[in-house]
Image 1 (cartoon, one colour):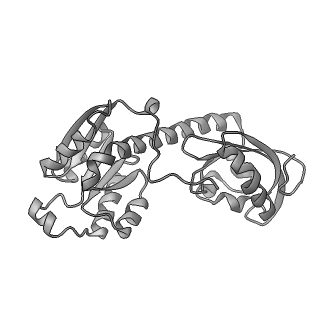
Image 2 (cartoon, rainbow, N blue to C red; image 1 turned 90 degrees about the vertical axis):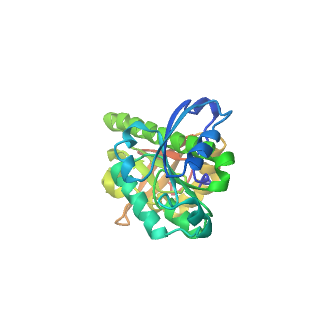
Image 3 (cartoon, rainbow, N blue to C red; image 1 turned 90 degrees about the horizontal axis):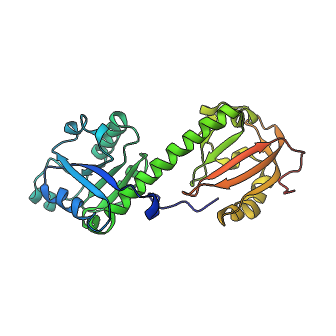
Length: 272
């Protein structure tokens, strides 16, 4: 499969959003000031506002592009320095609250020190990245732009798939981690599923082992180089039943695969 990107997609300058509104959840003005400074020379027109607690943010989230939350917003600077450990369970609860109140709102979590446990917790939530406070000046702007670009591409994918559904085409988008992110109804029906059931399925489960081997060795490297690929493979339904399919592969800017299916003669994993 394609090599997945890091936490967020890095957009080109052409795709960077120029007008940004950030809301910082923290009672320490130095964090907000550092966030604002991180965009100096970036070319973006940035407005940074603050609220003391996450609860104060709920009536503001519809009007901002990105949320920045400090690890311990209810403690003073001395306590933050003396006890940098993060309550990971509390962090997870806060991220779940954000997902409930503001789905798809890009969020950057600032921590004194990034640990493996914190990284796993943050990665389990969509639209979220983690950054050490010492990295704000060097990396925050890129993290924010990357999250916004990923959201833009996801919205573009959904709009494209809505058009595909209307046309009745069998198309799916496979994210860089290898799971089906979106699938049209026609695509799902080919595998005996509905769109909700097939979402999240690893793409390799949709084809025979021979077809997977050929796609990984020949098709996907070609697509990774910017080409499109067309060939005949054998699909596999959840029941174990196999069927021939003409497969078309392309790619999106974030490394996702676009998979199209047509009818085809049975040739297990072989390219025409």
